[in-house]
Image (tube, rainbow over all chains, first blue to last red; front, side):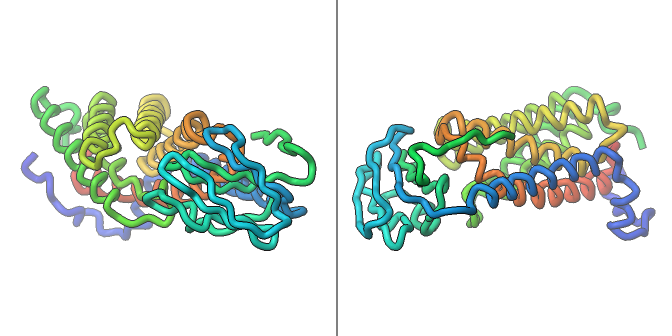
Length: 144
Length: 174
């Protein structure tokens, strides 16, 4: 163990070439699988996010619908989350969280959503806003 | 130079496991203090400790390092038994299991970088599955997948290269 901290001076080649020497076939397979999943899930999102704008927003609390909002009329709605009131603003067929009582404010920072299936989530308040399309509950299967 | 796993006595193994667990814990705490663009996107530097334990000391040490980091780490940052703790535990356990399985059954086909990437992928899949079951309960959670996979890919590469450099420097077998 005496020479444990010997710098790799016996190996003067650069980091990329040393890395390349170690790379195995499986590394490439994992990297390709990773990329395929990342690209695939990205295109899934693109595919579903195109099309018409949402017409209705369901406000969910622990997966139960507590309010249905019409996106056609501009409005400001306050719902009660588990931590306190959460204010939602509807403008021009978009909906955003205007103010929330949660610590991180991720829901406020997320900004406005307008397409069916998009979702605003305020996890600390157990609240979610899910946008609906023209048909009632037009959730078809997402295969994966 | 003999393999560390061959020369290590019981107490050497215990001490080294403890050191790596402490290293992983420090990385975990350092990361949790960093600001993040997305709540789940962090580099996962603590996984360096798990990888080093797996290569130098074996699967049992890797499990110990992972479980100590997740449990003690959540005590320190105050998330013990919160939803975030369960997500962290699921990610840690599944990625550790994936890396151990690849190391044991397919080590000829993978370098430490491949193992790190596999660990990162398993971490994302475990977290999104558990978050879907526990918190969101809707298939819309799959829309988060690209937002989780891209940072995880970068993180897996960084962690793999860091582990590679450390293994090289400390002349562990790899």
